[in-house]
Structures are given as C-alpha cells and as structure tokens.
Length: 264
Ligand code: ADP
Image 1 (cartoon, helix red, strand yellow):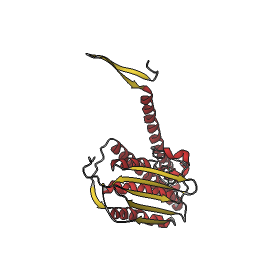
Image 2: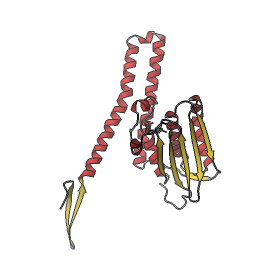
Image 3: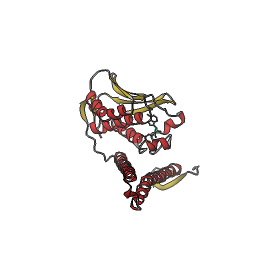
Image 4: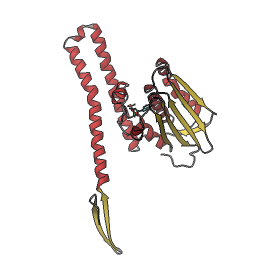
C-alpha cells in the first residue's frame, strides 16, 4: 500500500509487468519549504541594510548634512551597510555558482605553507588589532592539490569567524598536519563556543547562533555554508567540536594525493 506521502508519478507497462514510479511528496515538500525559507531569508537580509541606507540618506537630505559630525557619522553607516550588501551579494553568487557547479575550479600543486601564509597575511593585522594572538603550526612542509583562491577563502572564512567569536585576549590556532594518506587543517579558538544543539545546523545558509552578535560582526550568515561546499569540492570533510565558554575547533580532512581522481 502507498503511504500518504508517496504518490505515483506514472505507471508504465512493459513486457515484464507494470512499473509504478512513485515520488516522495514529503521530500518534495521539504525542498519547497527550504526554497521558500531561503527566499524569505535573502529578502530579509537585503532589506535590513537597504532600510538603514535609505533612512540615513533621508535624514542627511532633511538637513543633517549641514552638521559635519552627523554627516560623517551617517555617511560612515551608509558606507558600512553598502559594504555589507556587497558582501552578501558576493557570497550569494558564490554559493549559487558552487551549488550549480558553475564555479570554475583550477587545481594547482602548491606548498601548503605558501597557501596558509598568504591567507594569514590578509587577516593577521585585524587579529592583532583585536588584541588576539594567532599561532600557526605547520609540522612539516608538503605540497597539496587545491584551487589556491578557493582554498584561501576556506581558511579566511574560518579565521575570520574565529576572530569574530573570540573575545579580546583570546587565541586562535591554525594547525596543519600530514598523515600517510590524508592531511588535516585545524582552526581552533578560545572563544564563546557553540551550544551542542546548534552544532548540526551551523553549516546551513543564514543559520546563526546569536543573531544580534553575528549581524553586528558584519557576517553574512553564509560563510560556513560556502566553506562546507568548498571543502567538498576539494574532496574533503569538515567537522566541528565546541564547548560553550571555552572555544571551537573546526577540523578539515583532505586526501593527500588526488592524482588520478576526477577533478571538478
Ligand atoms: P556568520 O556570517 O553569521 O558568521 P557563518 O556561516 O560563518 O555566518 O557562521 C554561522 C554561525 O555559526 C555564526 O553566526 C555563529 O553563530 C557560529 N559560529 C561560526 N564560527 C564560530 C566560532 N568560531 N565560534 C563560535 N561560533 C561560531
């Protein structure tokens, strides 16, 4: 007997008998709901900065532009909110290209230390300004097969989260280790941590543990969704462990030699 959620899509007769193809409506409905939630989330995320930009522009036009202090303050907000919009649109485009496999992936063989150092260079000043310490541990130099730009994006997203969710004085560690057939990249911090109940959901688009803190940090809520996809593009996997009040560790594992494997 067919369950309520299963509906026959078509019935076909062949020489052997009758083939009934059924579709699981629950899965279709779930996908529909996900799509609706995504559109609602995107609209909300776009609306927030646009409302703010419009509000401050109107206030300036209504006279605040003649007060130099207010003028500078409001223009700064308009600038910050425009940057947020730009980041959000960039992340959305990246995510949609990765998901539809349209993102060009250019695999190269590169020393792991070169790649890590170039990512670290981008963010180390910001970490220092935040009065946090960054430790980079690469046990031994070796070469990896990755798309350097995309891989830098993985490292930067994880480091920038570690920085955002770690208070002043805290420390962030990036450790690379090579085993026989795989290698790992670990980003850990001594930050606020993530409650156990939230851990399975943090790679979902727009899922945030603390909405206010995440939004204040200027994050788009898409960083980890992008990281997860990019890790998969590199045939790897990502795991997270966390203790509230103590810190979080993301561990990424990749096969060491991808030669002979089908690239994307
Ligand atoms: P966001 O732009 O909000 O940081 P992400 O997709 O990068 O979006 O992360 C999703 C959520 O996971 C964050 O809002 C935050 O609640 C949590 N999170 C990510 N990294 C960390 C971390 N290192 N420490 C604590 N919480 C984190």
